[in-house]
Amino acid sequence: MKKSDRITIIVIAVVILGFAFIPGAWDWFIRNTNKHGLLMSFFKFAILGTFGEMLSLRIKEGVYYKEGFGLLPKMLVWGVLGVVIASAMTIFKTGTVVLLDRGFHFDGKAAKWFYGNPLTGAPLTWGKFFVALCVSVLMNTLFAPVFMTFHKITDIHIAETGGSLKGFFGSPLEIQKTLAEKINWNIQYGFVFKKTIPLFWYPAHTITFLLPGTYQVLFAALLGVALGVILSIKK
Image (cartoon, rainbow, N blue to C red):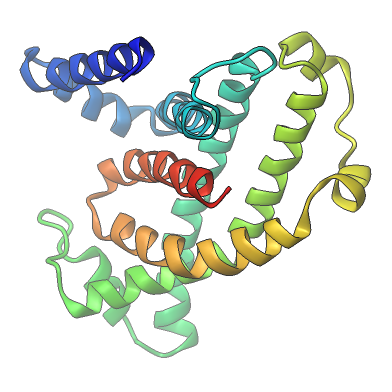
């Protein structure tokens, strides 16, 4: 085990123990998540999403960081995407329930299964599981490919501009050229879309939407770390 691995493990342990044993730490986290949801989403994804990429780099090349990695641009992109993801989760949760109840004539059953009592929430039932699965399938089918492709575009842009914030903002995103010439669609479609979406994201986000709302965005950010490991193993 390298020194960097030991440091990483210690930092993770300190953070976990801090939330577990520092009085009020976890309450502060929950309170601010409920009060400032989008802002907290920014920081959750900025930290965890970037850590997932650092872990991916460690698996592939043996280091957590290298010149040109683009730590700050990646944190910025992940933070912005975190706000977008949190917004999409809210939109698809609300929209899917309405679609089931009105479009497919569940006549209020979907809302009852998914939301339950305003005070106690919904118990874990097959009905709630069904709605959570529908939310996950719709979100990952309609939203995820666009999100993943944009994220790939920004990754390429960060790599080509040296990994600095100055380079990131100093050059325009060549979206059309990147889509046509720089993305490996055999991997992007053949693996990322075709395999990770149905085999990983459908079930993973079904679990996400079964959790209490306070923890959903945090769990979604942790899934980004897991996917980073999966993609590294694939490569």
